[in-house]
Amino acid sequence: MKSQAATAAGLETEAIIRRLSLATVCAEAACPNRGECFSSGRAAFLAMGPVCTRACAFCLVRSGKPSGPDPEEPQRIARAAAALRLRHVVVTSVTRDDLPDGGAGHFVRIMRALRDTLPDAVVELLVPDFRGDEGALRDVVAAGPDVLNHNLETVPRLYPDVRPGADYRRSLSLLKNARSLAAETVTKSGLMVGLGETEEEIAAVMADLRSAGCDMITIGQYLAPSRNHYPIREFVAPVVFDRYRELGLRLGFRSVASGPFVRSSYHADTEYRTAAESMADRKGASHDV
Image 1 (tube, one colour):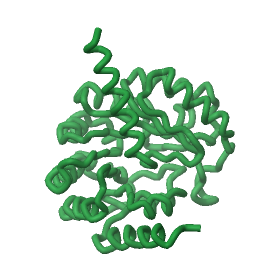
Image 2 (cartoon, helix red, strand yellow):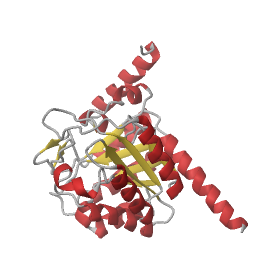
Image 3 (cartoon, helix red, strand yellow):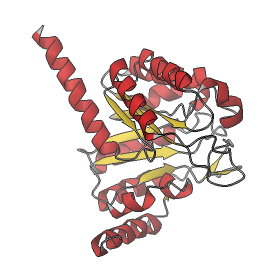
């Protein structure tokens, strides 16, 4: 059972989010870790939402025609992050194919608000693919996020059924371009398993990510949010998650979070510290040569 302190902390987190009229991916996507994270005073903000212009078969976020981005939202996100005393702020968004820049400008404004309010916080942006617009990505990277995250979600073979409207190579190129635009920015991606993929396919995607310079990876069990969503094909055994973690470390990822309840922003602060320490060790070793 939750302790009274944890329950109170969870209620306070929800109250702050509600008072500032913000959405979280924790709630909109029905994340199974929501209670744990809210009780720890953590939340992943969902900007420009909660209506998405795409309709991915795995996602609970509502699809439709969204309204224009709220110009006050960046400041409200910054105020919420400050009220929650966050040292690691995760901001994602719905996909906004209706906007000329895919929402890149709004991400930039969020970055500015966070830097003004919490200059010492680590900021992680989990971005959509911006329809392959390199200028939009350049603007977001130039704003200076500490972590640039973009999830591949699944293997190329399953994209037509799981991620209609997305493109595997386009998503991979975004991560590669982000790495080339800012070498100091940590890049990250995430995968779901249990959708019908093979271990060989996951291994190939992990190799692609490393070739694109991706530093961090998360791998978690897919859980269908309703009977109308893409069905679960398999509950992946813990030993398989262990194999994925071992493979990721051999491939050179600086952080590999692999387990049934792992999600892209779950314990993002801890995983970032692991990656940052690993990268610092790498730089130190290179200077010693």
